[in-house]
Length: 187
Ligand code: ZN
Image (cartoon, rainbow, N blue to C red; front, top):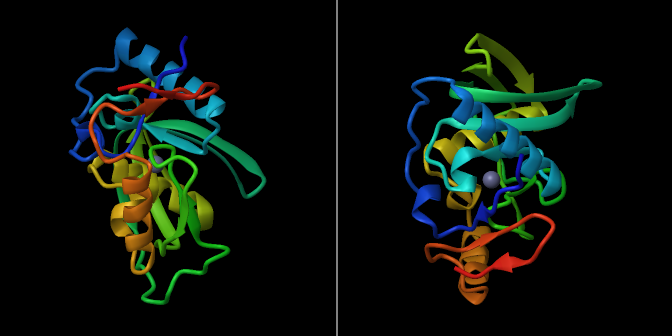
Protein backbone atom coordinates (compact mmCIF):
# COMPACT_ATOMS: atom_id res chain seq x y z
CA UNK A 1 0.00 0.00 0.00
CA UNK A 2 1.26 3.44 -0.81
CA UNK A 3 0.11 7.00 -1.06
CA UNK A 4 0.80 8.15 -4.60
CA UNK A 5 1.73 11.65 -5.81
CA UNK A 6 -1.22 13.53 -7.33
CA UNK A 7 -0.60 15.13 -10.72
CA UNK A 8 -1.27 18.85 -11.06
CA UNK A 9 -3.04 20.43 -14.04
CA UNK A 10 -0.72 20.66 -17.04
CA UNK A 11 0.40 17.05 -16.99
CA UNK A 12 -0.71 15.40 -20.25
CA UNK A 13 -2.15 12.40 -18.40
CA UNK A 14 -4.85 14.71 -17.01
CA UNK A 15 -5.77 16.14 -20.39
CA UNK A 16 -6.11 13.00 -22.49
CA UNK A 17 -8.76 10.27 -22.48
CA UNK A 18 -7.93 7.20 -20.38
CA UNK A 19 -8.09 3.61 -21.60
CA UNK A 20 -10.37 0.78 -20.46
CA UNK A 21 -8.98 -1.79 -18.06
CA UNK A 22 -8.58 -5.06 -19.99
CA UNK A 23 -8.33 -7.38 -17.00
CA UNK A 24 -8.83 -6.83 -13.27
CA UNK A 25 -5.65 -8.52 -12.05
CA UNK A 26 -3.39 -8.11 -9.02
CA UNK A 27 -1.76 -5.02 -10.53
CA UNK A 28 -5.16 -3.31 -10.91
CA UNK A 29 -6.18 -4.34 -7.39
CA UNK A 30 -2.95 -2.82 -6.05
CA UNK A 31 -3.60 0.41 -7.96
CA UNK A 32 -7.13 0.64 -6.55
CA UNK A 33 -5.86 0.07 -2.99
CA UNK A 34 -3.38 2.90 -3.49
CA UNK A 35 -6.12 5.10 -4.95
CA UNK A 36 -8.29 4.62 -1.84
CA UNK A 37 -5.32 5.35 0.41
CA UNK A 38 -4.34 8.44 -1.57
CA UNK A 39 -7.94 9.75 -1.66
CA UNK A 40 -8.30 9.25 2.11
CA UNK A 41 -5.01 10.97 2.88
CA UNK A 42 -5.56 13.94 0.53
CA UNK A 43 -8.38 14.06 1.74
CA UNK A 44 -10.85 13.89 -1.13
CA UNK A 45 -14.30 12.52 -1.94
CA UNK A 46 -13.10 11.00 -5.22
CA UNK A 47 -9.94 10.23 -7.15
CA UNK A 48 -9.42 9.16 -10.76
CA UNK A 49 -6.51 7.06 -12.01
CA UNK A 50 -5.12 9.82 -14.29
CA UNK A 51 -4.63 11.91 -11.16
CA UNK A 52 -1.96 9.44 -10.01
CA UNK A 53 -0.45 9.39 -13.48
CA UNK A 54 -2.24 6.33 -14.87
CA UNK A 55 -4.33 6.65 -18.01
CA UNK A 56 -6.83 3.99 -16.95
CA UNK A 57 -10.62 4.14 -16.71
CA UNK A 58 -10.85 3.80 -12.93
CA UNK A 59 -12.09 6.11 -10.22
CA UNK A 60 -12.82 5.72 -6.53
CA UNK A 61 -15.32 7.67 -4.43
CA UNK A 62 -16.25 8.03 -0.79
CA UNK A 63 -19.12 10.25 0.26
CA UNK A 64 -22.10 10.11 2.58
CA UNK A 65 -25.25 9.82 0.53
CA UNK A 66 -28.73 9.62 2.05
CA UNK A 67 -27.31 8.60 5.42
CA UNK A 68 -25.07 5.88 4.00
CA UNK A 69 -21.37 5.96 3.20
CA UNK A 70 -21.01 5.32 -0.53
CA UNK A 71 -17.45 4.10 -0.93
CA UNK A 72 -16.49 2.22 -4.03
CA UNK A 73 -14.54 1.85 -7.22
CA UNK A 74 -15.81 2.36 -10.77
CA UNK A 75 -13.86 0.45 -13.42
CA UNK A 76 -14.60 1.13 -17.12
CA UNK A 77 -17.55 3.30 -16.09
CA UNK A 78 -20.34 4.77 -18.15
CA UNK A 79 -22.36 7.74 -16.95
CA UNK A 80 -25.80 8.96 -17.89
CA UNK A 81 -26.70 12.41 -16.65
CA UNK A 82 -29.75 14.62 -16.51
CA UNK A 83 -30.02 18.08 -17.98
CA UNK A 84 -27.68 20.79 -16.79
CA UNK A 85 -29.63 23.88 -15.77
CA UNK A 86 -28.78 27.02 -17.74
CA UNK A 87 -28.95 29.04 -14.50
CA UNK A 88 -25.80 30.57 -13.07
CA UNK A 89 -24.06 28.37 -10.47
CA UNK A 90 -24.57 29.31 -6.84
CA UNK A 91 -21.36 30.73 -5.38
CA UNK A 92 -21.89 29.00 -2.04
CA UNK A 93 -23.63 25.71 -2.66
CA UNK A 94 -22.32 24.75 -6.12
CA UNK A 95 -18.60 25.23 -5.59
CA UNK A 96 -16.29 22.49 -6.78
CA UNK A 97 -12.64 21.68 -6.16
CA UNK A 98 -10.12 19.19 -7.52
CA UNK A 99 -7.01 17.56 -6.07
CA UNK A 100 -5.26 18.28 -9.38
CA UNK A 101 -5.93 22.01 -8.95
CA UNK A 102 -5.19 21.94 -5.22
CA UNK A 103 -6.50 24.61 -2.90
CA UNK A 104 -8.81 26.25 -5.45
CA UNK A 105 -12.60 26.16 -5.65
CA UNK A 106 -14.98 27.59 -8.24
CA UNK A 107 -18.72 27.49 -8.89
CA UNK A 108 -19.93 25.11 -11.58
CA UNK A 109 -23.35 23.92 -12.64
CA UNK A 110 -23.77 20.14 -12.87
CA UNK A 111 -26.62 17.81 -13.68
CA UNK A 112 -28.74 17.08 -10.61
CA UNK A 113 -29.11 13.38 -11.51
CA UNK A 114 -26.63 10.76 -12.69
CA UNK A 115 -26.59 7.02 -13.25
CA UNK A 116 -23.25 5.29 -12.98
CA UNK A 117 -22.71 1.85 -14.49
CA UNK A 118 -19.33 0.27 -13.85
CA UNK A 119 -17.40 -2.82 -12.85
CA UNK A 120 -16.40 -3.41 -9.25
CA UNK A 121 -13.12 -4.98 -8.17
CA UNK A 122 -14.54 -8.48 -8.71
CA UNK A 123 -15.47 -7.62 -12.31
CA UNK A 124 -19.20 -7.50 -11.53
CA UNK A 125 -21.27 -4.81 -13.20
CA UNK A 126 -23.28 -2.51 -10.94
CA UNK A 127 -25.40 0.61 -11.33
CA UNK A 128 -26.01 3.53 -8.99
CA UNK A 129 -28.60 6.25 -9.54
CA UNK A 130 -27.82 9.31 -7.46
CA UNK A 131 -28.69 12.98 -7.13
CA UNK A 132 -27.17 16.15 -5.78
CA UNK A 133 -23.60 16.19 -4.57
CA UNK A 134 -23.07 12.47 -5.24
CA UNK A 135 -24.11 13.05 -8.86
CA UNK A 136 -21.64 15.93 -8.97
CA UNK A 137 -18.82 13.69 -7.72
CA UNK A 138 -19.56 11.08 -10.39
CA UNK A 139 -19.62 13.74 -13.11
CA UNK A 140 -16.34 15.22 -11.86
CA UNK A 141 -14.54 11.85 -11.72
CA UNK A 142 -16.01 10.61 -15.00
CA UNK A 143 -14.79 13.83 -16.63
CA UNK A 144 -11.26 13.01 -15.46
CA UNK A 145 -11.37 9.82 -17.52
CA UNK A 146 -12.25 11.86 -20.63
CA UNK A 147 -9.29 14.16 -20.00
CA UNK A 148 -11.52 16.97 -18.74
CA UNK A 149 -10.97 18.93 -15.52
CA UNK A 150 -13.78 20.87 -13.87
CA UNK A 151 -11.82 24.06 -14.52
CA UNK A 152 -12.22 23.36 -18.28
CA UNK A 153 -15.99 23.72 -17.79
CA UNK A 154 -16.03 27.01 -15.87
CA UNK A 155 -17.91 30.02 -17.17
CA UNK A 156 -16.67 33.61 -16.87
CA UNK A 157 -15.42 35.21 -14.73
CA UNK A 158 -14.29 31.96 -13.08
CA UNK A 159 -12.58 30.63 -16.23
CA UNK A 160 -10.30 33.68 -16.35
CA UNK A 161 -9.73 33.59 -12.61
CA UNK A 162 -8.53 30.00 -12.60
CA UNK A 163 -6.38 30.67 -15.67
CA UNK A 164 -4.62 33.46 -13.74
CA UNK A 165 -4.16 31.29 -10.66
CA UNK A 166 -2.61 28.49 -12.74
CA UNK A 167 -0.18 30.97 -14.31
CA UNK A 168 0.71 32.61 -11.01
CA UNK A 169 1.45 29.30 -9.34
CA UNK A 170 3.55 28.08 -12.27
CA UNK A 171 1.20 25.20 -12.99
CA UNK A 172 0.04 24.16 -16.44
CA UNK A 173 3.28 22.36 -17.30
CA UNK A 174 3.99 18.62 -17.31
CA UNK A 175 5.52 16.80 -14.36
CA UNK A 176 4.13 18.72 -11.38
CA UNK A 177 2.66 16.70 -8.52
CA UNK A 178 2.03 16.85 -4.81
CA UNK A 179 2.11 14.12 -2.21
CA UNK A 180 -0.76 14.11 0.32
CA UNK A 181 0.73 14.66 3.77
CA UNK A 182 3.75 16.43 2.31
CA UNK A 183 4.63 19.45 0.22
CA UNK A 184 4.74 19.91 -3.51
CA UNK A 185 7.21 17.67 -5.36
CA UNK A 186 9.73 19.11 -7.72
CA UNK A 187 9.14 18.07 -11.31
ZN1 ZN B 1 -10.60 16.23 -9.78
